[in-house]
Amino acid sequence: MAHVYTRVVRILRLPQTVRATVIFIVCLSGSYAPASSAWSAATDAEFTGTPAPLPDGEFVPTLSLDAAIQLATRRNSDIRAATGEVAATEAALVQSGARPNPELAYSLEDLKKATRTTTVQLNQIVELGGKRNARIAAGERARDAAAADRVVKVADIRASVIAAFFDVLVAQERLVLADAAVVLAQRGSEIAGKRVTAGKISPVEETKARVAQANAMLERSQANTDVVAARGRLCAMWNGDVQCFGVANGVLGDMPDVPKFGDIATLIAASPSVRRAALEVDRRSALAEVEKTRRTMDVTVSVGVKRAEDIGRNQALIGLSVPLPLFDRNHGNVLEALRRTDKASDELSATESRVRADLLQFHQQWTAARDAVVLLRNDILPGAQSAYDAAVKGFEFGKFTFLDVLDAQRTLLQAKTQYLNAVASLHRAHAEIDRLTGAPIATNSLNGKTSP
Image (cartoon, rainbow, N blue to C red; front, side, top):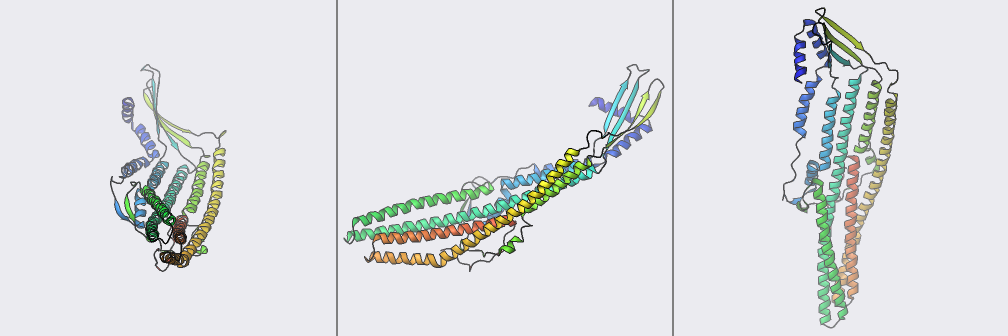
C-alpha cells in the first residue's frame, strides 16, 4: 500500500495535463460511494443491536388479547428476522446504485534509467444500456418483496397469538369445568354414603360414586396440565418464559357475527399472501430487465501519460476498448429470467385460488361453529343442567338410582365440553380469516353474553 501511495504522489506531481486526466476519471466514477458509506454507517448503528429479551422472572398477572398481540409483534423472533431481511435489502439497494471503480495501471519498460519508459494510466468502465437504473429498480422490488414478507409474517403471528390466546381461555374454562365436576362428584359420593348408612341403597352404589369422584379428580389434573401447556405455547410467541403470565383475561362468549362470504372475498386482492405473490412477479420482471441490459456491452475509457526518458518528454495516452459480443449475448440468462417471471405469474394465480379456497373453508367452519355455540348455549346446556338437577333431587328422595345421576352428570359435562370445543373452533376460524385477509374482520358481538 505504501508503494502504491508513493506512485500516486508522483502522478500528482506530473504536469497539468496528467492531473486533468486524473480529475476526469474521478468525475466518471461518480459520487455515489460516499453516500453509500454514510448510509451503511447509519444502518449498522440501527440494525446491528439485538433487542433485549424479556427480563428473567418477568410476570404479568393478567394478560389481555391486545397485550399479547403487542408483545408478539415487538418481540417475536420470526418478525425480527423478517425485519432484518428488510434492512438487508435496503443495504443491497444502496449497493445496486454503485458505479464501477476506476482502475489505476502502472508499467515500466527497460530497467536502464536513460532509456526507460514509464506509463501511468487510468481505466474507467462506462456502463451502457441502463444497467445501473435496472439494478436499482430490481433492488427496489426486492425491498418491497421483503417488506411484504414481513407483513405476511406479522399476519401469521397475529393469527397464531389469537388462536393460542383463546386456547388458554378454553383451557381455563375446562379447568373450571373440571373443578365443578369434582364438586358434583363429591356431592354425589356424600349423598350415596348417607343413603347407604340409612340402608336405602346398596354399598355398591357408594363404590360407584367414589370411582366417579376419582375419575373427576384425574380429569381435573389433566385440565390443569393443559392450562400450563397452553400458557407456555402463548408465551413462546414472544420468547417469554413458560409461565410469563397468570390468567388470560377474555370472554369466550363474545361471539362475533359471521359476515357474508362475498364481503370477505372482496379482500382477497389485499391479502398479504396475494400481495407478496404480486410483488414477486414485479421483482422477477425487474430481474429480467437487468439481464436484458447486460446484452449491451460496456466500454472502457483509458487516459494516462507516458514518460520516455530517451527523448525527455511526456506523452498523453487516450484509449477506448469495446468487448465484441461474438460468443456471449447473455441469451440464456435472459430466457431464464423470463421463464421465472412466468412462473411467478402462475404462482400468483395459484395463491389467489388457494386464499379463496381457504377463506371459503374457514368461513364455513366459522358459520358451523357459531351455529353450534348458539344451539348449545340456548337449548342443550339449559336442558342438560335441568336434567342433572332433577336427577340429583330424585336420587336424594329415592326416585332414581345413582346410575341415573351419573348419566345426567356425564351428559351435562359432555355438553359443556362440546360448547368449549365449538367456541375454540369459532375463534380459530375467525383468526385464520384475519390472517388470510391481513386485517381484523369488523363484526358485532352476539348480545354481549358470556360463557356459561
